[in-house]
Length: 111
Image 1 (cartoon, rainbow, N blue to C red):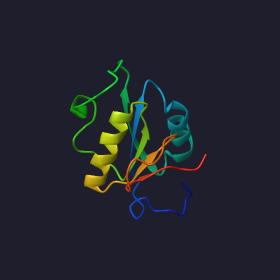
Image 2 (cartoon, rainbow, N blue to C red; image 1 turned 60 degrees about the horizontal axis):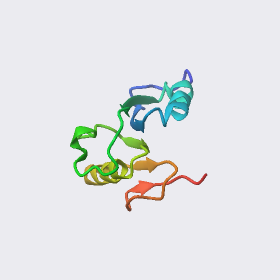
Image 3 (cartoon, rainbow, N blue to C red; image 1 turned 135 degrees about the horizontal axis):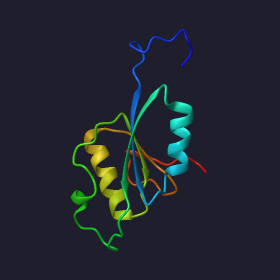
Image 4 (cartoon, rainbow, N blue to C red; image 1 turned 120 degrees about the horizontal axis):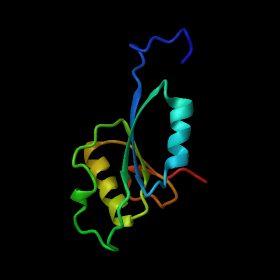
């Protein structure tokens, strides 16, 4: 942040990252390195082996997400789908990486 910005006028953006088995670590490191003065980062990691079908994601995803933006680096489609639905209900923009858009609320950046 430059010396002329007042942090009380520009609060840090709250970004929550969901990753599975380290799948977002390079991007997380970049955000920490280049955005730590403007971004408050929360990382939720799922590191255990998962079944091929997850009917109830409540054991893996919080019901309430406290963020201005969510980044999805999950590998499991069921978790990504449920995360997209939760973000839509809570009106939190969702960026999904390396996947097709999961709903009208999620955004997929071009690669």
